[in-house]
Structure formats: C-alpha cells, structure tokens
Image 1 (tube, rainbow, N blue to C red):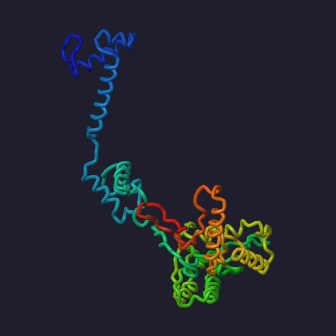
Image 2: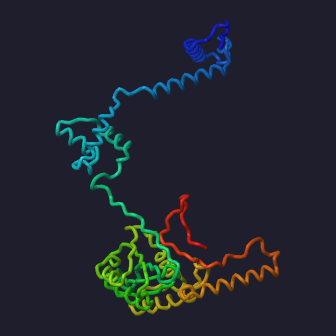
Image 3: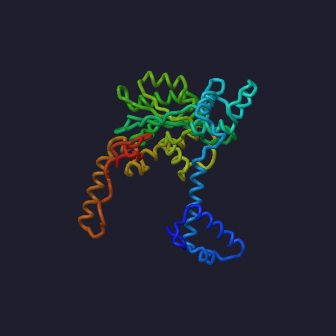
Length: 357
C-alpha cells in the first residue's frame, strides 16, 4: 500500500501514525481531521488498530510464562497426589505436609490446576463415592414375568406412629397382585407377602423378576432366602434414586391422590386394611389405566384387553366410514401395548427407548 507521497507504509510507519493520531485526538483534534493530515481514512486507521491489537493478543498467547511448570513437574505433582497416603487429601493438605518433610514442588493453586487438567479434582482414593450402575432393563411381554414392589406409610391417629402398606404390582398388566398392611417394616413381612402372592398367582416353574428399591426389607436375609428358594431373580434400584422404581412410585401416588383416600388418619390396622382392600378392588377392576390403552389392570392381566381393543378399533373404523368428513387422519391407536420396559436403555442414536405402542 502506498502512502500520501507514494511511499510504501511499513509496520513501523503504521505504529507512528496511530500514535500521532491518538495524541492529536487526546489534545482535542477530531479523528477525521487527523487522518486527513496524514493522508489516510478513518476506516484504515481503525483497521490498523485492530490488527495491532490482534497481534499483541497472539504474542501474549504464544509467550511462555516464566513460572510455567515443566512437564516433569506436572507429572511429579500427579504422582504425589495419587500416592496412597495423599489420594484422599486435598492440595491444601498435601502441600503443607510436603513442606514439613522439606519438599516443595509447587503452590496449592498449581496443584489444583494440574489436578483439574487431569480431571482429578473430584473425590480421589478412598474418598471417592461408590459408583452405582443403573439397573439392567427389564422387559415384560406378559403377566407374571416381572413384578415391582415397595412400601409406603399410612398415617395413624397416634402422632409419630405409622402403618406400613406393602404392595406388589405386575409390570406388564399394572395389576396389584399382592398387598398387606403391617404395623412394622421388616424383611419377614415382605417375604411372607411375597410367598403368598407367588403361590396365589401359580408361577411355579416360570421365570420371574422382582424389582424394588434398596430398603432394608428388600435386602433382608429372610427376603433374599425366600427369593432364592423360589428361583426368583431380584433387581434393585440405585440407592436414593426413586426413578429406578417408577411403577410402584406412580401407584402410590394414584393411591394417595384419589378423592376416596382417607383424609383422616386410620384408627386401627383393620381400618387401614379395609380401606386398602376397597382401593385395590377399584384399581384392578374399575380403573382404566392410561398406559395400557384405558383398559383395567385386571382385564389386561387376564388377557381380555386384546378383544376389547380390537372391538374399539372396529367401532372407530365403522364410524369413520359413515362420516369420513369428521376425520382428519387416522383413527385412534388402539393397538395392544405388547412390551413394557422398566429402566429402559437408549437406542443407537442416543434417544431413550419408550414402551411399544
């Protein structure tokens, strides 16, 4: 690029022009007039300033700090932090301890920076919390293949005293296959209820998976022995993760949010059992469950849902043929839900797998 006098403007000339115009503007001159004096436009001056700022930033980025740790020092810091005696300690504890031994490698902030770059700023060594694997996916294609169960509290008229409702629900049909109200919460009660339910449903010789959370009654010795004796596989939720047992949680919500739920605490365990018996009768044989195409859990458990849904499908087809102008597309989906998944995984594209429609 040529200057006002036809001479090529060097980088040094540009710095001088920027300095002169800046000084002129500082002394009260307008930038436009200053640029006219040196023979350049304001746009050119702005571009030169930007280029010099970018150059300074790049130079600062490429400049190696004088106090930068060497690769050997960084490796030594990681090795020290991962020694058994230091694996559970923070840099604020490690550095003073090293100093007491006459060793100095770097400051606490440098230790933290090295650990952060190595993704080790979380708990290390024995301080690392246990990693709980998500339960395997359980798939049910028919009744009595998979059950889920849980325990919930029922209020009593005595403050601080509760009754305990044990409830077993079939994963495929959503039917409540077993329940009982006890005054205590323990593994013996759970094992007794499960054994009676197992016999009543006549599952002997069939494969069954039982899923529950990690509570004491679920993992108690009596319950585990009963499951092994019957040849039943057990699946457990991760500690503190209620979403791993969603079907039982949803059932308890339905129970306690029903208008007929007792607004007053129960006087006796017999009163509680009487109320729960009425609820179970309503839920299994009258409640049309949205997740199973609005048939009752009892109908689905007995296999009656296939004929019911087929009848609905034929009815909708017939009505559509009579008045097609009222239908903008396909008729309502009345297909049987063939598979129900507990703790579904993800498909190849990373999306969560949903139950089949």
